[in-house]
Length: 320
Image 1 (cartoon, rainbow, N blue to C red):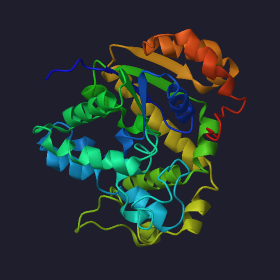
Image 2 (image 1 turned 135 degrees about the vertical axis):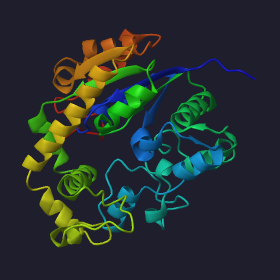
Image 3 (image 1 turned 90 degrees about the vertical axis):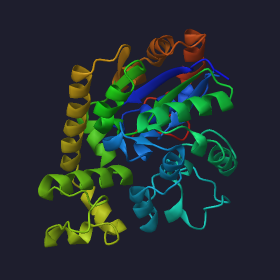
Image 4 (image 1 turned 90 degrees about the horizontal axis):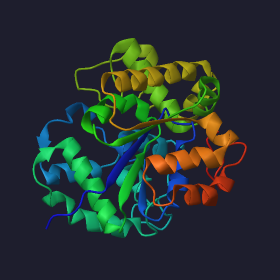
């Protein structure tokens, strides 16, 4: 049976700039599936064009994410994690499948049940490139929830913007930015971004990603205490005390996104700033709703604009 392809959109941002706020507001549009932290949870972008089986693809989605497992192990999971306290993996969070940390719990009150449903469908996907599996998976989620379109948003997706823009040339792209000083300050207090910055520092200093190390790779002795399995919560928090580290991270992410937009201009692009959104939310959200082809953009914007506070907060979610 052939199904009409749903609408597709991706929000690209550095993270800590209001993208979670947008995702949580998009949830209120009844025909739209707001998918959070999906693309950044899957590590195989470097091999995105290589064909793999549906079973191999499901193995990726159902495996734990090493970075998140490290944060669970040291007691600093990001507050965005929504896995229920009575869930199947609640007693073994270092083995939590990456789909169950944020993505599926944001879609349903029974993420384990949805995970089991997907486990019965995704392995039968045909052998195809990784990115085609992504498209097929998100389309499946959209159909199974009775929605007409999906909008994916991952914090820090600017760093994979080159892959996203090459892989989804016809997808609607929202590029959200925020001034670097405030973004860096927010990153410095967030465990996931503390770890992202640390990884980039490893790559810059010795050409090694500590979460993707081969058996023959080594790091300088002075960095060994920062490796996964050795780093502690205190060490990670201490690194967050120097916000200048995160200005460099902001610069790197902005350069990645802007070069990608120049190299692979999307067919449909909307640029937004966090500052404009907070200062005048209703017209900014109306622009977004029109771009995403909502049935009633102005009605949706009017409904949700009051949830944008002066600090950019939406209920319990904040960008700072």
